[in-house]
Length: 105
Image 1 (spheres, rainbow, N blue to C red):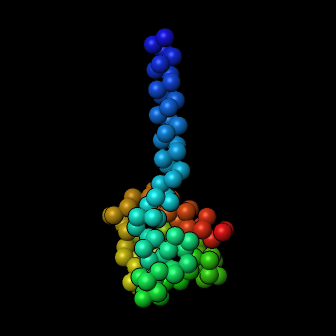
Image 2 (cartoon, rainbow, N blue to C red):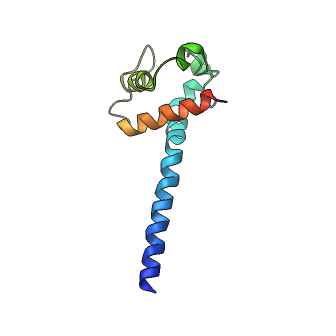
């Protein structure tokens, strides 16, 4: 009985960790990026318009490699702040993965 309970706890924790990891790119985007880039990545927000954010579905952004987007996010560009030191490398990669999903919509 004790072994079954322990197995259930381990499986539950692993499943929860997977679920959290799957949504963290979207969650980070929502808390750090959405104010300027918009929920859909269009940049159609007051802050996005004033800073002339380029939409994620523009050919210019689609053509960039993940490494390019990671570097831009980490180092900043133009009016966009740098997120190195504020986000981990893995978190930045998760945000870039989320941006790629927005490009497909």
